[in-house]
Amino acid sequence: MRSVDERPVADGGEGASALPMLAADRGGFIDRHQLWTDAQYAAAGQLRRVVDELGIELIRFSFADQHGVLHGKTLTRQAATAALRSGVTAPSSLLLKDPSGASVFPVFAADPQVPVAGFAGAGDIVLVPDPTTFRVLPWTKRTGWVLCDLRFPDGSAVPFCTRSLLRGQLDRLAAAGYAMTVGAELEFHVFAADTDQLGADQVGRPGAPGRASAVRPVSRGAQLLHEDGLDRADDIVQLLHHGLTRLDLPLRSLELEFGPSQFEITMTAGEAADAADQVLLARSAIRQICRRHGYHATFMSRPAGAETASTGWHLHQSLRAIDSGAAVFDPTDAGDALSPLAGHYLAGLLEHAGAAAAFATPTVNGYKRYLPFSLAPDRVAWGIDNKGAMVRAVGAGSDTGVRLENRCGEPAANPYLYVASQLVSGLDGIDRRLVPPPAVRDPYAADAPRLPASLAEAVSALETDPAFAAALGAPVISWYATLKRREFARYLAHVSDWEQREYFDLF
Figure 1 (spheres, helix red, strand yellow):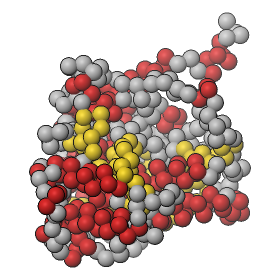
Figure 2 (cartoon, one colour; figure 1 turned 90 degrees about the vertical axis):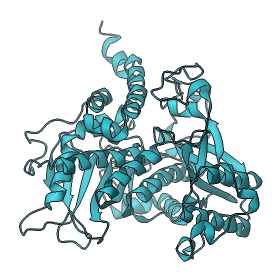
Figure 3 (cartoon, one colour; figure 1 turned 180 degrees about the horizontal axis):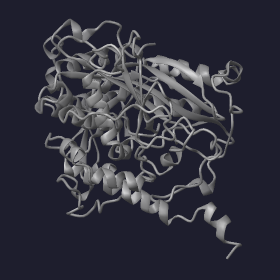
Figure 4 (cartoon, one colour; figure 1 turned 90 degrees about the horizontal axis):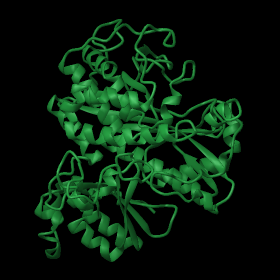
């Protein structure tokens, strides 16, 4: 059972003209505001065929919030037809919450103090489905899944739609004559769940999540790429392989990582916008599949019990010329590691590393990963095929060509904002023709600036970086910084078990 027809329908005609809209569909919100391309109209026709042929009864209409977490509604087959015409409404307040679900802005006020209009009274936004993302879920019955973009009821763009923010940066890149290829290496932990029953102390409220799930390890750790170790976890490997490939995600490998209960997936590199969608879907799929089979998967970077090896998201990126398809990071002169253009792009990544960290590592927990000799970076430097550097230049002489691997991200990052942060940084480097410092050979001893030590430090860097305000808009930076500062303030106000152990008996 596949998610899509094998035929490239969008390539066989002119979208809406090749698959004419039904009379009942004309004049709807999507048609009226011209929100779909021809390829999306064609994909909508294909979606309907799949729904009819496979007897799909439910479709999840989902969008990624500011934290990269999916929200949305599950509609019946009958209601989904109207959603493909007019979208699905949801409270705009979903975009104004911290990770605990607490509203950071006064959402019911006439003036919610949001830096753009359209959020008064927790009014509605419209989820506009992108039918090219439609999938059939392989782990449940007769259920489909589609990603959505966000619009206000008047059809105007919601500036805090992170999927749209990435496309805006890709449009800037295209205007310069380039397209971006992204490859994802995503690490995560899978534990055995001690129970599938919720305890009373696990029930939380906005601003105060309940106790975390009780879990047990599924591997011993300190066994990087150990074949027997992976074989012992074969039940997990088989579950994830089946689920991810049946979602038509470009799964490349499933690997046992260094730490206990730590795994990694890699996905075949592709168009940046598609790669971001794929990471979002893969994370949600892994969590849901594991939960249904007695496991708990988490993309938290440094969960309790995993101190020996935090998880990261290594983001491989390269550019190619739109007119010729040629890789433009490959060196043009013998003996060089990078092309001049790649050098400018790399210099931008380094120049804006502090600000970009607010998007690449958006949680309090993720900054506990920036440690020396940990396969994670601790300072702003680059190296040639050196896994201790923040940016690793790799691929020279290979079939795939030179690419830059940013190793500072965490797997909980919103994929759209993480990738967008790389484009903002790299494009500024290209525009200003920045030159990178020499590559380091000993990244943990290099005389280089340190990465931010905390989420608060990264947010401060973001707020004072003019390139990000110019590229994403000052309202977006203000909105995001406000959300993250509230998250960090809650963290500081919490009395931790460390404080209790350190001071309670001593003083």
